[in-house]
Image (cartoon, rainbow, N blue to C red; front, side):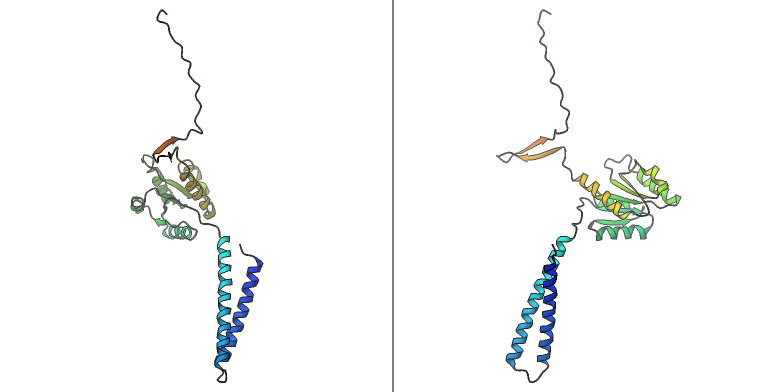
Length: 232
């Protein structure tokens, strides 16, 4: 964490280094300077530079702790849309914000990206004009009978929200979408990282056990067993 003392120490180290640099340059340019005086000035400069480097790295370390950690994403992100400028720009913004596996592609080339990367998350950019809306609708409906359906986040204008709501995982209204998109990606990623229905542990001998997670299971009542006599 950055403190006022770190900033004061850095400012003092910068001032001392500037002073030592000027003194060394002055003595080095003076023919009357003795070797002993030049050696002392060089030593002072070296110590000042070491102190400046120490304070400089202290500031960098403190600033690094203050930076927010990039979100963890367990799957690649594919930005699909008709407008190349929009989809590529959005992919670059996602990469700059920590989503490194982000790529943009059109409706004619998304399949090759999906085949190359498994368990992908799709960000669908839906423009406002009708033909692109039809292409986006077709794209969403093409996964209706898929065995493994990808997670889809649709970026739409308000008039298109009713159609996409319920057909995709998240619907984000334009024009201001980026912060909402980040939160939606984090929600989907967190759900993907949630514990599975079963968890594997190891017994003392090292053999794995599969223990079902029954924390949410409904407790069934114990059935009553009535014995029947042979005479009845």
